[in-house]
Length: 112
Length: 113
Image 1 (tube, rainbow over the protein chains, first blue to last red):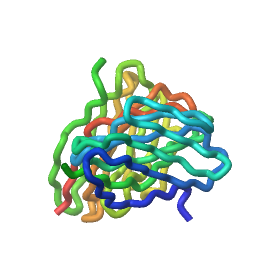
Image 2 (cartoon, rainbow over the protein chains, first blue to last red; image 1 turned 45 degrees about the vertical axis):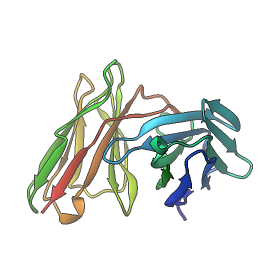
Image 3 (spheres, each protein chain N blue to C red; image 1 turned 45 degrees about the horizontal axis):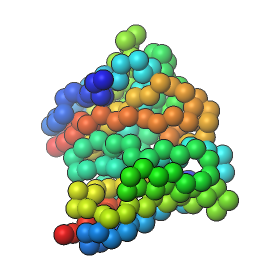
């Protein structure tokens, strides 16, 4: 079993839809959770960063962490064609030597 | 502030050759991590360097190696290239503290023929 599981998609939605992207994990030591967005032929760019459980909102994006269920989500409101990309979740513990563990990524396509 | 830069951006090699990729981190960042990204395997961790020392290593064969210089710039080397080494190689930099985010470069796309 992988430490982080993420549905690869592709997920295809119409413009304006609410998108929900999810990851599950098995390591209860994870405390730091991130979402990266990667456009085709580019490096991943940081989208959201959260610590421990709870919600964090930034514009159209909301990140949720449920540590009791070992489940994290990224919601995108009013999705735009420019949101079409691969979304990677990533997480780590708090030690200097902890690696950042990535999900395999979910490919999202928003059509006009 | 300038982002993470990687050179070269594209590379074509043949089996058996070796290759060296370069990464310049964000100014002030002391940690550089390297990843291999392929469609089938996703993002796989190669190694991390912090203050010129390898601090963490993934499950790759010894053909994959790296180093970091005193200015935090890093290089990775792959010897005796195989077809399966074709991938996007990404480096990411950070301050080097636990739990922090990493900032990625644009990657080097390597094609092995």
